[in-house]
Image (tube, rainbow, N blue to C red; front, side, top):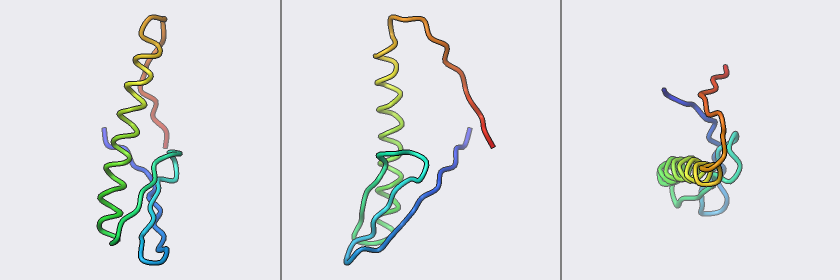
Length: 72
């Protein structure tokens, strides 16, 4: 399943700042726009994977319901 997010880019001095609008904490920078885009993809993947691992660890012993949620 392909997920889409909104990437925001802003030039600040010599740097390109980048963040994902829908996911707090996913932000980065790059010396070029291309580098900022690559860094942002990596940051998003790392945050999503870390959140999955933390949730699995936190709720490993309790009974939970985990399901896919789709919105449009």
